Length: 622
Image (tube, rainbow, N blue to C red; front, side, top):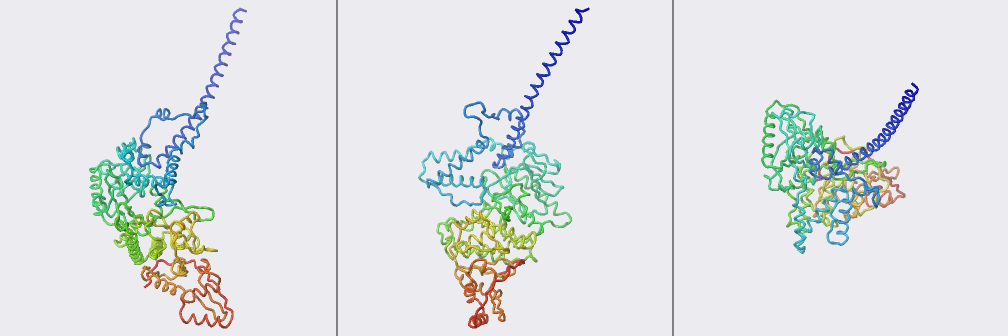
């Protein structure tokens, strides 16, 4: 009996020891598992983060992001940090930006040696688009240089014709390949869906799933891995659908693909198809759906001036992209807003250039033609008024298409010290001001919104972008004195925009600029001149006389002369100097009255207060 109890005690102790060792082993395994789990989470974030970065800068990244990838492939393709190898752990941030740095160094080396010039580039492009444009320009110059050897040309040709894995899968498949599962179900009996590349802006195309909802009477575009559409176009907005190849002026930016343009009043949506038959079948289905919709009883039309303007101001949220231009600061607390491009209805490849290659070869002919084109553009803009404006009117759509041609101008062909250049940019400023007033979504500018209005209302001109503030302060007033104590309604350009003075600043320092440039507020007359180089001086005298006759006030009892605030802001000198410069443009009666005050003794010169109300539109000064 005693022997049996002793055996049982030893056996129970052994079992306890075994359980204890198992618990200890389990604790060790648990700690290792927790470590692996934490590292896996970090690795997953790392992969997802950089897959997003790749998708933003690649045309066909949607296909790569939308394809179902086995989990094992992600694990195998991921290289762990070389923690125990010579050299230590790899800097992830440095390795991720290695390719961008290599491209930047190559561009700097080429620019530093003076082989190619990239000074044509804008300082307001975002870095990815700026790098792409630089590389494209360098390759274009290299391929067009006759002195290059055959191996260099062969290498460029091979680089342009080589297809990557993403290129081979571009625009192939359907919603499954893009990972798109729309919340609104697609009826295979009535609806049509296909993979297209949609033009977000010039130089950027995004692969998306386009669904034609026949019963829903709209088109929906879904980005890869999306459930909600990034853009919806109602059938009521669509004015026409056309093949771009049928237009002789259209130059296909995607050779080998087939383009279709869906035209609305405010914007033309360009779609690219892989096959000619797919494009034709989609166009036929769309025309049938439009015909069926138009045959139904007429409902309230969504294409109104306010609706189209609202869409243009919210283009960023509609397309899901931030655009290619940098944001602009509008407050002292560095609050930034997206630029609002008003001449983006049609892309450059779908337009007739303002000047031909032969005219560009002779700068004088090209400059004269640009001056005449801008004069006609301003006259067309001044013919509209907000009361009678119809966004679907053929005249207004023609005006939008004409403004879109500004992006085809060659700014480097303009002599910035000439009269033609002065007329071109002053007319462009007044045209943009009129355009912005007509499409003022949030109402006319006021003291709080005028900075946003003048810094964000922009035209794409040439390969650059210009806002109202940049045209006025950096281009037209480029060589004049800087403003002092500037307050609304006067707006200075943002600090980062002041490089425009070096790039585009005009050589004119005429003080009459202060009277010719219309600020848009009630202190200025609503009439503006359409400047022509041949009669520019007479027109400026007339505009100055019209402005000063209305603004200069004389108080004989207090022996005081009141001058417009612009004379104080833009430093025309002290009171008497400003008065002497304004005196010659006044009426004869006012000149005699001021002369009498000066003869009798001391005259006080004061400046009027700022005006915070704006004109609804501008008119032409006859």
